Image (cartoon, rainbow, N blue to C red; front, side, top):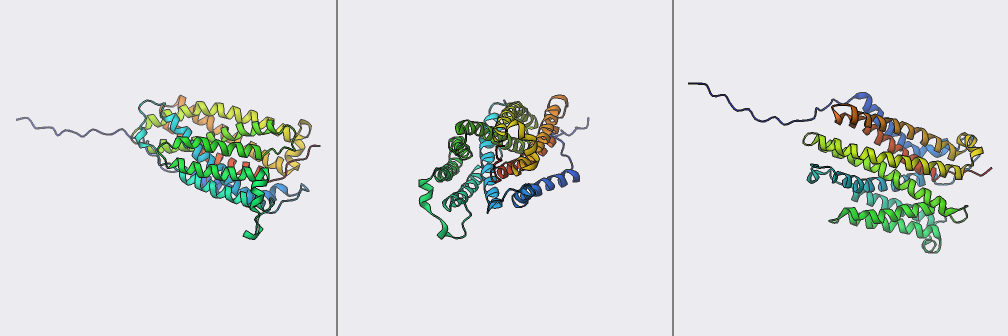
Length: 338
């Protein structure tokens, strides 16, 4: 009588889990530390030797503005990346990563309240509640824009908990519009042109950084069950990100030339706080672009498409530092036209 061969259970195809690299962990911690120290040490370092005065509360304002920008990236990126995932056949949409949108929106609301308090005290950091003049929020342009951001983040937080979280795109767009208008007051030459450039720049930057963050969370969540679907979403994101990067480059270049005329750019990049911060941001964006190209190369030319996760993870961490540098740009003195 022939021996019965036991049936073997089907083996699930799992993406190989790589051992964490000590070098990568150290690099991540270093970038996080840099991002945390920029609001504290960035203003004084950028202003040293320029002859420009540091406004009171610059570090605090930088930190609050960084939280506002990060909240925009996180929530806007989730809406954007979830929409991309729906375009990938076979993507397990019932197993999307847990959203951080509500937490991001509430953090943005608190930060916007802090910035509104600064406006209510005549653009100075208040030392007590008695310093606040609530009427200034309704009587001034900056005050109304600050209130708009507070209310928009509140609406975005409610949308994040609703059955249609994608509706949060509307209040988030209001925050972007408010930031674009705030950055270019009416006394500036052609303020609407500047606001338009900032609107496109900030929107594309938020989608680039926040979208990549959520796509990487998808890739990590699906690494054992649907690694190919995760890689497909990353590939689709990479194609859109190329367009976003082009828009960011063009709008950033024109915005720079509006603030620093062509004949003064080289001098102001090293002799003004705004220029130094901008130079640091440009160099870091160049590093981000190299990491993005490496991730795209691995997606197209290697069998293990999931390996693109490693440079993409470095890209999103570096983009976090870029967000903080962008916040510092809003707090240092605007360069003088020579």
